[in-house]
Image (tube, rainbow, N blue to C red; front, top):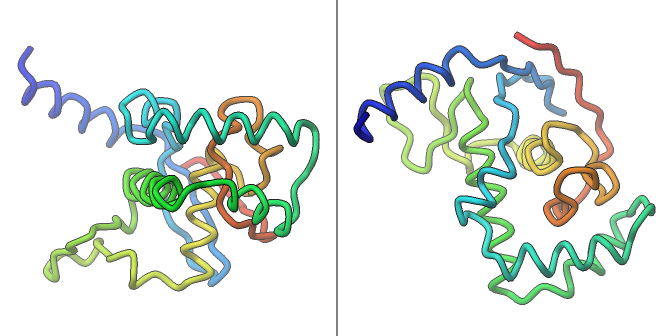
Length: 167
């Protein structure tokens, strides 16, 4: 099987995946894929040095639920490059998971299902980032994603809850 054939197969399988209806703070409901965080890390989307540093910081907070002040304290330990890598990782993961609407850095004006990140309301964008960075859960603390990848949940928290139903 060549790469083109594999991409077509993967696209067909993704089209058949279970999606989640995620209600945003604005009241809009988006269709989202389950975030494949481990795959993104293994594919090098998150620099290894950043993943290691985030894992170390997460271990120091074992068993604690973090408030915004504690999360900000953790973020202070990241270099500017690591902070940018964390932001880019979250954005790329969000772009992969958003199905309806799709997020595109260069949306096609003819495609009614595509939206640019800067067109998303701020509170909805933060909520969506938190949703993908917590593996499809609404919690935004290190505790909420500790079982799988504690090094990834360093996005500012949002106390809203998510109501999701398989589609």
